[in-house]
Image 1 (tube, rainbow, N blue to C red):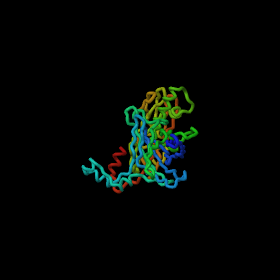
Image 2 (image 1 turned 180 degrees about the vertical axis):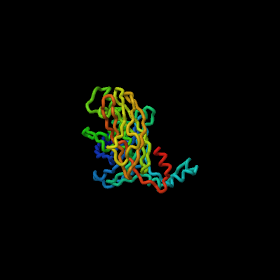
Image 3 (image 1 turned 90 degrees about the vertical axis):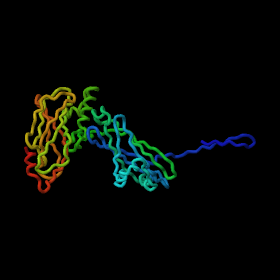
Image 4 (image 1 turned 45 degrees about the horizontal axis):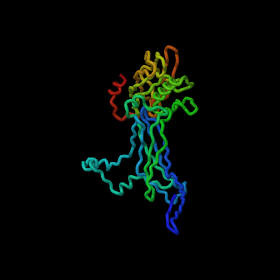
Length: 338
């Protein structure tokens, strides 16, 4: 609203009302992938939607982008390293004051024409001791992404995304059925089971909750991404009892459910009594790759020796079995077999 005062046979005023169509020039979408018990990868896509709004000149310069993580979490942007900039860091003057030319400053900004989009990647990790101990479970709020941009006439703006939350584990599909064919390595399955168990204890019994389907979870500790053909390798497995009572457990690696990469040596180990509500133990197995290729390590079962209950575990991890290089030391093979 604009009001003008003027004099014409006395003091008079003139009021004028203006209406502007305020639109958002950018659209921000998020995608989250689990990457461990206490880490998530957040993909942020920024799209210039001015073309859809009929703007004549709708170029947008994204000057900066960031991610405001919630308390206890820390976010770090994953960038492509510029080799020239890395080499300049050896200069002490560069460390004191890093100056950029106008061309480099322009290139560091992402220019989005109408209809264009750009993707950013952030790693969100648990930073505080309590958050790292608990992990990041399904439904936990990770934070919000923000974008600072400049339009063609110099107008600046700042846009926040919606709250980003941790997605559910891939062990269960949308309809609640098991999906044992695809479980991302280090997907945080045990964290989701522990959270489901704590929620069920607080709010009563639930039907078909994750901790009822998987009262005991088995997860590999730093599993290898590659294995050499015919060379056994030790794998450490973490067994966690999420139920509310102690269980007399035995872990089994069933050869009939394994392909490509199989167990080498004893196929089962009796764990004894494992305490309830997060009680855990670590056990080692040896695996060997029989043929080259990409395989999923499966066939792991947990058996309660008291009740006879069997809990089939999802795929432990994926591994690429590669052919050995020429001149592999035979003594090393013998040592691994022993």
